[in-house]
Amino acid sequence: RHVPEEISTLLSMTQPMKLRGFQKWDTFCDAVSNMMNNTLLPADGKGVMVALRPVPGIRIEQALTLCRPNRTGDIMTIGDNRLVLFLSFCRVNDLDTALNHIFPLPTGDIFSNRMVWFEDNLISAEIVQMRLLKPEQWGKPLPLAASKKPVLNATHDGHAWRRVPEPLRLLQDAEERAS
Ligand code: C2E
Ligand code: C2E
Image (cartoon, rainbow, N blue to C red; front, side, top):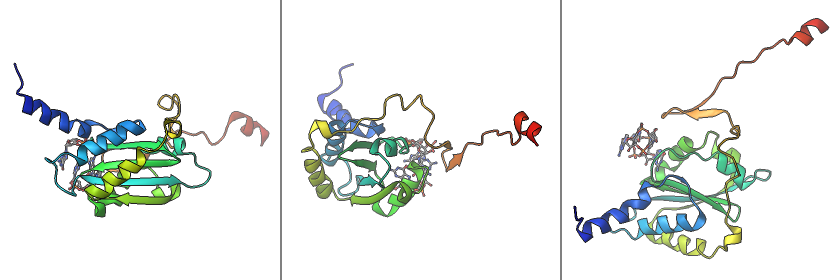
């Protein structure tokens, strides 16, 4: 059936909220600015954007492997040694709650610096700055990260992060003979 033009426009405007997880730098900027320009969404209530810089010794690509958003509409990108997250419909007072759902470790253990934007015009202004970053500076996820062993052996059960127990034999045959 023919979809009226205004309905398909409405549908396309809601698409960015269907994304989840890692996005290329430019896709991330497009998605967030589409949301900011969507007058159907509440003014200054569309979400929170946060930029995180890893502690010395952790590469941004490694930090990315620890960032596991569950909620549709939660997206992130990496570039310029920063991980930038957009948490749709998260309120700024709930930022720590949301970050605890997304990272299996306290974010203070992974990141030394945090910047937060939570009003439409401030988020849009930061997106303008982000668009100036040259493609050479855009980050990429580590190759084969999905099939490799995760950095931290933990899974999210919908409520909290849990370490996955691994069976371990305390005494090996060789050690038993040695004693
Ligand atoms: P909210 O979105 O108003 O959700 C309030 C409470 O409703 C949540 O408290 C949680 O108990 C429940 N809730 C909402 N959505 C879901 C869901 O999809 N599944 C389940 N199982 N429960 C849900 P909670 O968890 O303490 O979160 C408080 C606030 O923190 C949320 O308010 C939201 O603003 C923010 N937040 C928490 N986790 C996330 C997240 O993963 N992504 C984003 N974008 N925001 C989050
Ligand atoms: P979703 O929004 O894509 O969220 C996917 C999963 O992320 C949720 O699975 C839950 O494990 C986690 N999650 C997202 N937001 C929150 C949050 O604020 N607090 C906590 N504790 N966990 C969160 P779940 O619970 O099986 O929900 C599946 C889907 O059902 C959600 O997909 C959402 O579309 C809907 N849903 C569930 N509870 C709520 C709610 O309280 N409010 C709204 N608006 N939708 C909900």
